[in-house]
Image (cartoon, rainbow, N blue to C red; front, side, top):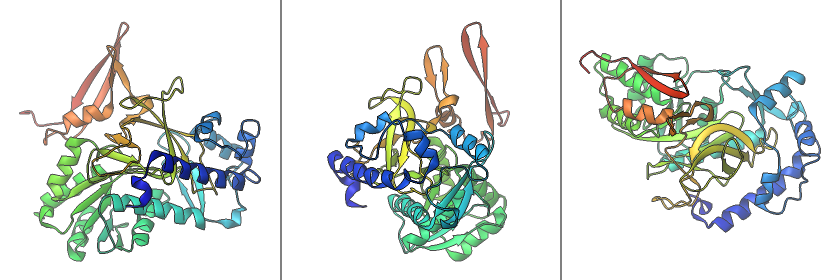
Length: 379
């Protein structure tokens, strides 16, 4: 791990402040989106990290609206279009997809962030990394691929293959690391069982997951580890932000990569900073993607502040349980906060549970929850 991962809070925050002061003067002269957003709010001469809270939030809705007003790519561009080498986009599950461009410099930064994800999971240059993703405009596969290359590992793309072909390739090449969504890791295990393939006996020793909650949910992680005979690690990232979260050997959630991101955890309604042990919305600022930056970006992700100590020795901000869910998905039932990840943790303790859905109804002034579960009648 890098020296900064175990440094004092004073040193970490000084590093973040220096990166912020270096970056803001680069973008403000030419980035029209942030020129308008920050012109009356602040200047590049912020001299304390706490002053960051004086800046306005950035939201996905704003960025999408900006692209609609300034087609095709919006005004959140610091360089001429000719300087950009990659285009990726969000899935569009909540509306119009957001397109994000990267320069070579910011793409190299992406790879460095993913390199940290691999190193947190104990992956090194002697590993063989198999990436079970489709070939498309979504950034997860591409950034994970570039990070493995930067690490020096042998990198094997699995796009264009069906599940059985991927399983056979994993066995044939002796892959030691599998990168995919947690649900797909379980699906691969099901296909392996259907074809009498014992993946527990394979060379895979580490699985790394992102794209959906799961790998930080104890019961889900245990199911993946049992199916693969490997150690499972979570990861968190966003197309518009970067690969900001990584798991460590302690297996207690994820760390924020504070060398490359500034994290705030705020009460969603009031914007007040939450204290250690409390849950709130994760607000992030990236410190190396100045071609298409995101400053005080409201992620919409619900996390719990876990403090700055960990059994692994890192002093980067710790988020127990990883991403708990979306802020909009949190339910309050009879005064108790209920998180989707907590429901998933309970249900996934039963191996026979396949699919489920949560039904929320209102009885008078009270919210009620019902679960519909797909399972054998004997369960």
